[in-house]
Image (cartoon, rainbow, N blue to C red):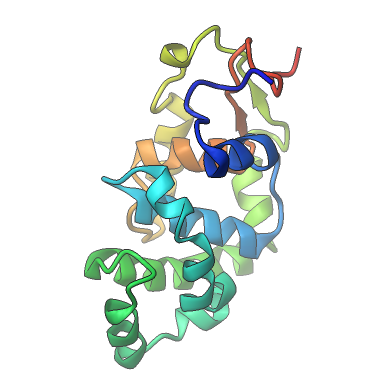
Length: 183
């Protein structure tokens, strides 16, 4: 089956076929993707995808309530965990973002309601002709990034936000030659 050109190898193809561009609404999974996209900064997505299960174990299945209560003992444990990216700033960011995530849940009822409100609960389907037509950021990712930063989140720059938007299906950027492209 023809896929987007970046979906090479079994792991990336499975992610492409089953997850990327598919609307996601469960808050724990949204927190997971936000955390993983932040962890990916400066690295390849494949690097993170290979470690996803280890991240789930290390971060209590991305339960933001649990992660928000992490102490220095937890940080030390994570910095020694060879299954994840042991970057002090990214680990601290995950904990800080968990706290801010809970604040958004309290304000909006769920993170899902907050994040999907940016697109009026309707995915954006772009149908780019080729991979080079897919942007790394947009005015919308700028807007989401600015709002998350204003709320105290870290590792949520506009490029990370756009990748997050693709990962959770707010944006569907499957290329026209891909079997997943909505015709």
